[in-house]
Figure 1 (cartoon, rainbow, N blue to C red):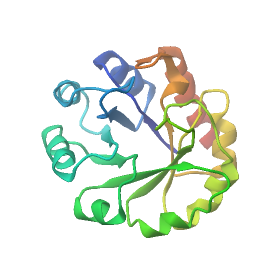
Figure 2 (figure 1 turned 180 degrees about the vertical axis):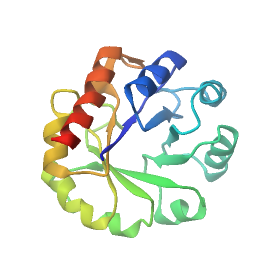
Figure 3 (figure 1 turned 30 degrees about the vertical axis):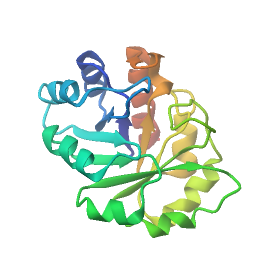
Length: 206
């Protein structure tokens, strides 16, 4: 069964839309001055109103270890996603469940993943000057071969129309969607969310 993470949740309505559609995880972006940023206190308010079996994940970019730990504790996050230039040493020192994100340049090898002893690797599309949520895909063959390093979460340009192909080609542990199910940055389109998750479930059964 392919897990689904809907990232960039900024409000309770979108959280419940994703939950009722069957998502496994919700992602909250704790990166100031980005379109999907949410204040930790606001995220905590949302998390207190959702079912306990929905996984909550906080996304950080080059944040300090103290900040990461404080937000993780105060929001009772189940895992954190590090989307910047964090070192293997930082990942290890946090003593938290960690998803390390890598923006994939098709000309670069993926053996850097082996340096990070984390719970999962998220593969996103490299776009200069962008940290994610670009709506662009990368060569999924690279993601398939990256599975030898551990659990792979496939991201980058996924949407209801291409996620089935992505799953069949990569067979990832999970898929991560943000801009591909939005009405606008930071606001989800309920139909797209439902269509995306339904397509994932139907693909798993086919």
